[in-house]
Length: 155
Image (cartoon, rainbow, N blue to C red):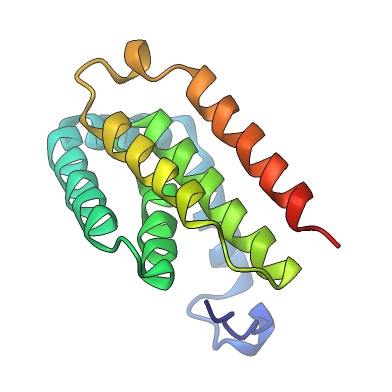
């Protein structure tokens, strides 16, 4: 897992003037824009969920390749909730935090912990009634497991 280079925003060429950027920001924050965006997301929810399922399959197929698992979990973290798969996104987010913290500690993630997360992500994504089947309890239990493993790995 390599970190990208941080480039200050002012170093990028500006596409619009500051006043136009302020107008665009106001337009993007408007209730009308939010309502239109929500409608588009709802209309495309089946396609979005299908894309999440593709990511989940890629995640499951990446077993043993921790770098690829992290990459796919990162994609899911940012995308699953938008597709209406809240628990899937939260579990993927927890897995990403685990990878990040283990990297900070200079330790390799426990493959069993990673496998539990991957399995939970797959189950959450495929649940017909995700909210009913994948409660916050699963997310909390995985977070507790991660906290325990991080405490064990800490010097």
